[in-house]
Image 1 (cartoon, rainbow, N blue to C red):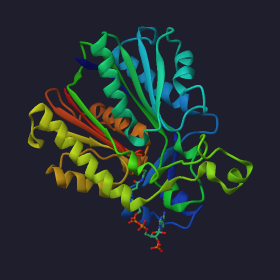
Image 2: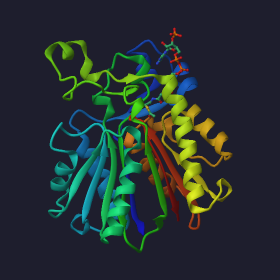
Image 3: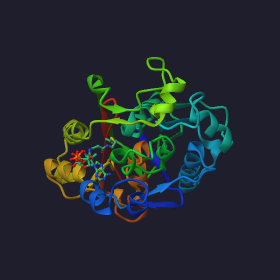
Length: 323
Ligand code: ACO
């Protein structure tokens, strides 16, 4: 059984408010607040890249566990906004942190569900052979989105969240994880240029395709509600518990209205929300919220915490963590 030995999180210093966006595109604090619940988000400084954000969250998780980088046996990075196209962010991070020559790899492209998928992989690796696995969800979305497309740019923020997992001696257990994918919706949300199907050309770059996030907001909204609530129901069914047993649900932080409907469908008001401050931080959103919730006393020993996420793919998942 995998346990959480340490929690970490990091957000860059620079605050980008709704008013700041209203000075750049045709939007308003009122529109963004009403439609999304977001008031502010953090943006990385020019000198920062993905591995910098990840490193800060990982060091915090190690410090929380009272361990050092050389104590880590495996590293998993969930991100859709990597340091470079190839090699993966995990390679840069492993070297940067002075870890041993351990297995290190990215889970990329799963959108905002990446961290929950990574948790599932990590717990399976620990069950296969006991080891300490550092799992980090990190996103530097501000650098890869269009700063001119008001329908997407106001939604996102940068950040990182990490957990150090081990076979025993933790403050929470990874009791169960469920994940799923519906690839028939792969064209509805994503950055659909830049791979082998639609390689970058000078013309595509001139059009701004390298920063064009395709998103059918209404469809994403409906599917996010449906998949996150059914993932939690499936999860609770598989561990023989009900929503009344759950002390806190930590959902992916995309939109306050999505979170409201998920809470209502599940029949609970015990739902963690921090998107007001950070916006949608993709793969970082769930581990960042988990880190914040446990650091600020929202989680107590004995609590059953449920994580749930949904993202491009469409991918989704849910995890049960008894503290
Ligand atoms: N400021 C002002 N007006 C805007 C903005 C903006 N930033 N963005 C869009 N509008 C306009 C639109 O152009 C449209 O104008 P029109 O009626 O003249 O055509 C109007 O607002 C309404 O647009 P809708 O898309 O219908 O607005 P809706 O209430 O559906 O909200 C939103 C849009 C917030 C994107 C919503 O659909 C949503 O949250 N969907 C989920 C998508 C999401 O969270 N994506 C994040 C990544 S995926 C993930 O994390 C799971």
